Structures are given as structure tokens and as C-alpha cells.
Amino acid sequence: MSKLPRAHRRLKLVNPSGAGRVRDGDLELLRDAPLIEPGEYDAICTGKSRTITMFGKVVKLAVEFKVYPLGLGRPDVFVVLPRWYRVAMKDGRLGAGPNSDFVRELQAFTGQKVRRRDRLSPSAFAKAVARVEVKTVTEDCDQNDLHPTCQYSVIEHVLGRKDPKTGPGS
Image (cartoon, rainbow, N blue to C red; front, top):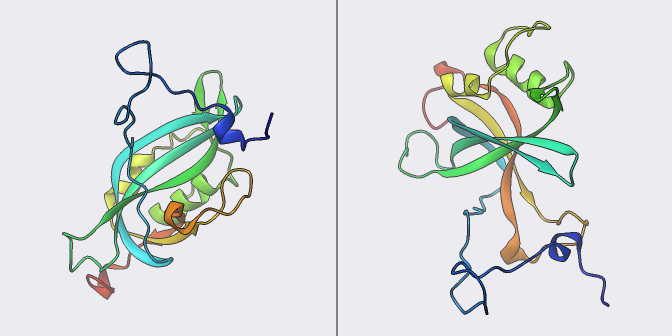
């Protein structure tokens, strides 16, 4: 038996009509994976977030942002990219430590120190224009190089709130 990458070992094709053979056209792309040049961009949080559990134990929080590659002066040109945060699940509730990326970026964005029992909401990012750093994912989960057509962009960091004095598109 050949050794397949971890992501492919769990792949199971299911015919949407129930049982039987999988025909051409039975699979669809579940979401877009846009690719833009790495760099800093203006972005606005969509207010959407989701969590996934990876490999049965690591909980990740994805916060979606509309990233404007041509600046806010061209609001019709944007891509939706996630910012992935590692969080914890305790007693059925999500949590984040004081030194986690989520808490640090939230504090930098809001300009307020988070206290121990504060409720932390990803929607706090939706209150203003953010400055984000975008990177290109070039390796899969097993550190194998991705073919250039399979590479995609993600938000590496939320750098903070955009200064309104600099104006749109700067």
C-alpha cells in the first residue's frame, strides 16, 4: 500500500444520490481559495466566523475578512480571506489565552486591554477598517510543496485598525 499524504487518507467519495458509482460532475468545489500577492492590505471583517476541530484535538477559529487588493478606493474589487486562530475548548466553551494571537490582535485592533472574564467576540473586528498582512500558503499539512495552481492566500496577521487620516486606498 502506498503512503498517501494525511489529507488524502481520509478522502471518501460519496454519491449525493445515495449509493453507487460516483459520476463525473458529482463533486463540487465547496469554497473558493483565492490567491493574491503577499503584502499588507486594507480589510473589513465580514462578521462571519466558524470553528473546526483538526485531528480530533486542535480547535481553530476562522474569522473572515474582505481584503481590498486595490485599496478602499475600489470597493468593488475584493477577495474573502480567513484569519485562522488557534483557540481552546473548555467545558464546551471557546477560550483564548492572554498571549494568544487572537487576544493580542484583538487588543491591538480595539486599543483596549482584555480582562480575565471579558467576553471576546470575533465581531469586534467588524467595527472598523483593519490593516492585514496576507501570505501565500505554499505547503500542505505534511510540509509537501503545493503546485503553483494549488497555492492560496490567507491572512497571516491583523496588524491593527487602519488610521482614518491616511484616507482610502493608502
